[in-house]
Length: 173
Length: 173
DNA sequence: AAGTTTCGTTCGCCTTTCTAAGTATAGTAC
DNA sequence: GTACTATACTTAGAAAGGCGAACGAAACTT
Image (cartoon, rainbow over all chains, first blue to last red; front, side):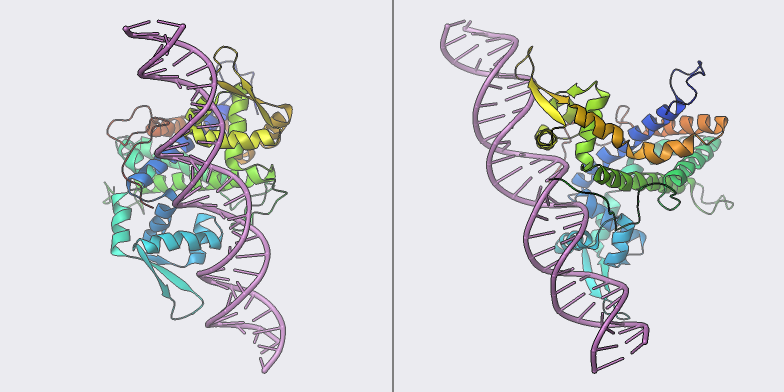
């Protein structure tokens, strides 16, 4: 991990430091999302479904949701159940292909999404928009770079990751 | 959110884009951690406990763990139960204060931590170390900046976040 | 028309997480 | 020293997220 421990100027390895920063980011957002979801009377997972729905123009199929969330279809079914039972969305059979179901966001669901802005947004946006122009550009470039570095698409020698088939060894009790 | 929609050069708002990048990062790491934990025969939460233990010199109290993880003590109890039942850690009453219990990492637990390097590490480190020197420095600075922007410490008007007391309104069924 | 694939649901199971209610130990006050 | 209070942890019970396997229905293929 420490490649150039010799560079005496830096107290710690940059790789380490960047990992630490990344974990801080992760941790902060995780805590926020719990928080926020509670504030809106929804669980994080349910809110995520609503957000995806909203981002897709108000409707999506369970399959699409599952892929988007990196979760099994069965899981989506139960999430949608709960959302539907709260009247925040409705299931509608597709006309074109009747195997498909469209989960459609209701007004009340839209409100929920608006009222509970994304955990990140809440805090991050304020800070981001206070930055100088070039700082914003810089930050954006860096984030996109990191995202690209982590993204599931361009995997080479890493464990499987294709959404929905997580394979892999034994699973003890 | 869109402050300078007028700047026609950019297809989208930088704030939006950076949020999207951030979500990609989050999503990628979330998927990875599931994956990785499974590969090691542990669940993500259990692995997190082991990692924290390791980072604390091999032992910590449930209370400390709970705080570190942003989770209730009862939750830690059940996580520790499972870890202990797999022989990866041991509970030991504290001599000084017998109300306290120390959760101590066993050799087998240490192995697990080493064998299952952090979800981020796995992938990120490889990519990071391929970057040019100035790129690394740049990225690190950006990440730390974002982390600072999100961190719980310097909150002003945002929802509570002090680890362990997540307060906040009603929680529907 | 029979077989195959795809989509979604149902079922049974496990894990995480919470709150509320205990139990034991430590500290403090009288 | 006995009684209160605070702290550290566990237990118990419930809800939620998540999975794979099995299933019914609709759409393709041959």
